[in-house]
Length: 440
Image (tube, rainbow, N blue to C red):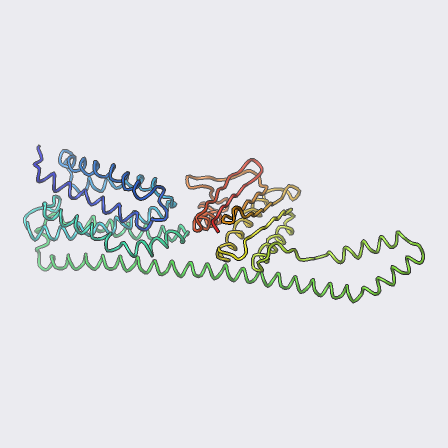
């Protein structure tokens, strides 16, 4: 069986919708691309153009519809997309299936248009005019969605790191995609039964509107979730400050009492000196020094909020029998959000303390060092002891508490990227290392 040029051209036009589909996939992932936009575009064109031409040639010899070949191409193309972005699997899958679900609607409208032009044909093969209309609709969608995708969708992709939420959007997109695949009429004549043609157009338009509305609600929900998380971080930081303030109050009361009792100590020392009791003087001075230094608040840095955070985690470490070595040097004034720094140091310290808990108390230690270099870069290095047991996947270290990716380390990496830096995590048999660099 041979294929004439008109058939091949019509099939090729249907496969070319992969190009605007690819554009739609990369718009929300603009900050998560592994390569430059120009290089990514080159990779996609080198792959998509031959795939579209090959698919247009193959569908007739295989004895299947163009749509069947088209859908079968989407699976390997997902792995191409996965290799060109830095997002984890849930977010990558959510973007890809979301675009596929939206881009399935132009096929329905093209079928309706084709049914109007050729009412006796079957929907398996679009005419050249209908295929061109489908391609036009497919190209229009990323143009219309460019601004919200670049501003709002990309924000959600960059900031929302909750796999369960993204998997819920995957399920939703899959439902709409499967529905549209099943809704393609076998024969256009079925659309002319009663009011079916008008109902088909109305139903598809309504489904598209509902899907877009759900995505808008999801974005709003993501905003609320992240605002709530930010509020929790802020509340936790305030609680740490209150804890530090109470510690300072206790210390001030202690020093006030010691100052009040100082004259009694002088009288005792004078009495011991009169007796020539040097050992008694040494013993009393040693005891007095212990009382003076007991519970003295440590000043880790000039910033009150971060100082309270470091004091909180050092106290937690002390209660766990963990030795701490803190060498903190931070720029003043801050050019980095105080909450972002609190989240970064909090996640690093929590991860380090959790690692130390896997060892006996005598082997537990945490070392945190920060350094400002060249007046424009902040470097943070954290080293902690642990038992050497880790879980790693393709996207980095995974949590040892649950089956997913470690959200603490992912949050640290996200903050580093936000300030045009990087976060590297690695380990030896006995130590875990976190190296973070950020532009300040």
